[in-house]
Length: 607
Image 1: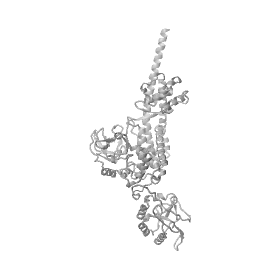
Image 2: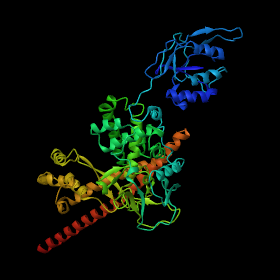
Image 3: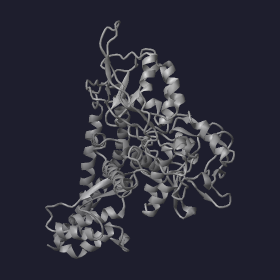
Image 4: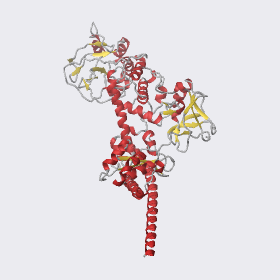
């Protein structure tokens, strides 16, 4: 049976029983054998019934090749054939035998191998999607984009990524870890005291093989195994184009990662990329509906939307300025929004900044298998003495224990945003929650206050981090500005500067006359936020009861649990702040009441 894909205007004979021959044919034609079923999606069958082709008819089919075959841009010989209707004596039905033009590899050996065994009835093991009844023959040729790289295209043909990402592995898979370790060792990584294993925290991690002392340096990854903006491209022409256009480090490394990944085994980074997760745990992979549904109470939702918008904007900018002008170097089937979401997801979760290398950002294979622990304070950096990327342990590890580093002092929301996980409640000393404060539009001085805020880069609505131990002075300054009366208009500028952390006198900022109003303003904002968390957490138990698809249900249960863990930890901080604010207001008001009673007592004496 023959299938035609009208959008690409070529025909391919699909034979289930001819796999060896077709695999060889596909390789020389630049097609992945496993992609046949995808290529035929939305395609149409040339024959409305099973097409029985005998050996002799196939040879006649081949024998109609033009005496002067033309070689197309793809480098394939074009064969011409006729389309006719045959009815044999023993035929039960009339069958349309398609003999239209098609393209095959110039290798005659593949053609001969196919013709030798193409006599059996062809019964594909998948259902035709569409059938054609047209009598017009398709004239077709398969075009391969030639990539002008120093690496031969026959060895490094790019893998299209228009659907699911074709490289990488499942996030908890160990299938490629041994190949990664072997490649790293062969490429200059010293013997390690750790190995990649499946772990309870992080799914994959580095586990100690031997006793590790506190204060011991580990890893020693040489700079030659580090991916940075200075890394050598397998396709140097593509790298030169990006650098000529002054593309910043982050999008440059993201594009580099896609370029190397698409070359598969032709890239020196193939073993590393094969061990990277096919879909990183990142909020980049949450849909807008999922963000609105599960993170409606948390301000991290806005940051997630902003990050997704920035990634999409970066891709659109690169596409418009560079990719569209060099399609042979940056084909859209490889460099698209899906692959950029993947590469930025990898960067957000694995890119590190190396202080000893002037703040250079880089991907460090092997080291990026280390998981985060909130109680650990050690981090990756370049060691000039050993000339490698190392970290110094801040505790001892026994064989079989997972070894941790710190990803930085980040809140649970920030860890979810970049790395896709939420630590257990109460285990993160750096945890915080974003509290939204807003000017009231009914304020008589709203325009003047807004103008003062804009002057210092702030908006009418501003988020400030609150920790379990308290809140920043910037938050207090914003609250002072929000409740200040018109008589304090001369202090608006000072308050706005302090709220933006641009004032040199922030610590001395104190307005006793409006202290109570400022604290009440913060408390009102805090309790408004708590009510949102309560509403979500109460409704979370009955969410997704209507989902029937197991795959979709599993995803939603997973995302919902992350959101519940985040909202629970953030609400805990708000509860603590609510308690502190109420006590301060109570003390303030009781002190004022005592002073008023004392004043009235003195008044009675003078009467």
